[in-house]
Length: 452
Image (cartoon, rainbow, N blue to C red; front, side, top):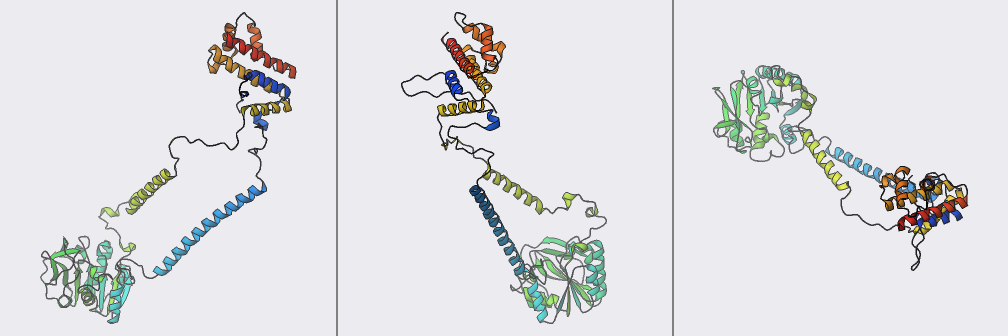
């Protein structure tokens, strides 16, 4: 802890202040004070300020415990509310949220409504998630609905194509694209998306003419050279619904969009009628929703190559990380220290400089620390003399720099270099009288240099 220079405050109005050396010496001689301030701490005259290491009072400790309990209670309450809300949402949504075109889902993007209509017409719906189960369930009395043909791997497409040729039933493919058409519907090619959602039948297919306009647009259009194909709901000359004969008794329906099966669209136009006639022509409906296990890559495609960890991370995570970064920056700006002008704060207790000096002197006297008092007096005198004689502050406590400069400013040679060295850098005084004498000599030396 750096040493403080005892300085005396100015006296009352109309009186000249005593020099710092005399004030400190007088106080040290009559009230020598405290040991090293780093060891026992220094007083401020009042003696009421608590020591930094002093334990809190029972009342303070009780207040701290109460605040901690209140904070913990608030945090636990917030967590309980969030947990209860999450559980309530999970319970309310249980069994109703399954995904796009899921016959068990009551969401706007689900297909529970059409499944219920089919049930009312005596059609049994079975949901499968693998190509093996879908192929095993097909037959002449079965309609197989594939909700995402482009998601199937090569082996899965081969299994579905074999089932289509051998079953003798109906297969409905929703929005098959260029990835799956060569295997599942050879001779058919995709021709881009339809610009209009609601389209007219424009064909002789009984299911289409009965339903009328339907939301078959908004998805893919097709073109084919197969002679027995039936093209319906054209958009810009290309159909969005194709009916292809398969085997002897079966057929395949290519539907460019699955919008007519969604809960939110079923009641519009002729969507319900078209959906019921396409999916309800057989008593059993196999609703095939390909799982991740069935989305295997083709052996000759780039998807079969090894991927890094970043390639496996979904693309949406990059936006989530960016949002978290922006939120962190905004939180840092919100909680950071505001830059602005300095604010002056009132001190809780104002103590006059004279009281602080006297209190320090009493501590020195109580501890009998004459050496400490002498060190403080000499250090303060050296710093003031260095300013007077032009010695840099960094060299104020070096005898080789300060003593010659002080000697050069003395008039009449009242003191020699040896006396000045002993006075400013000598040993500590042996008793209180020597300490008072040291203070007088330092004051006289400073006064002489100041007037020279």
